[in-house]
Length: 215
Image 1 (cartoon, one colour):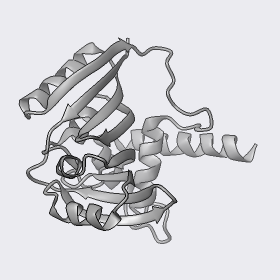
Image 2 (cartoon, rainbow, N blue to C red):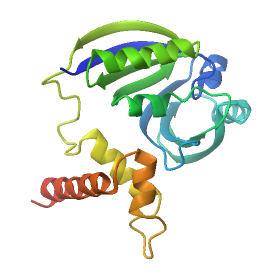
Image 3 (cartoon, rainbow, N blue to C red):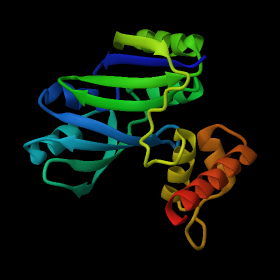
Image 4 (cartoon, rainbow, N blue to C red):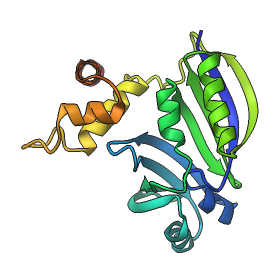
């Protein structure tokens, strides 16, 4: 039986932890993450901050951030593409992916991350929880609940989390470009699954998008 876990994670060594600590009024919403290069996972984060110049100066000094790029901006929110540093930062992304975790919601504010995740079972969450504690991350549990039958995806979103991750990674790495800039094997290695598995995720995801938007 799957498990839903709601918790806070607090550490300056988590991705953007130093920025959250320096700017308590900052709000960050993680839209998605992927890792073509396991040493440099990419996160797309919406930021709400009154002073973008101060925010970007803080990002420049954040040791957990290797590089960032401002993608787009609305009246209140700014979308950043952030590449994580390969050292001095907790490798939480690869750990929860390896544990079979699914990130449902992730918001950073007041110096902490507030996270909602689904895990295959209690044991996989326990392993991830123990990893965070070993990395000196302060974890404050809000709730643990049976996750079977609970669908947190938006009704308008036809994709599963794994299909979305594979499609986004393929697009960002140039798999759909002409000529192709990467291979199926490279995407499979980044996701730590077989070539057949990633091919099936891409085909099923494409099929769902076609059914949802064209019929």
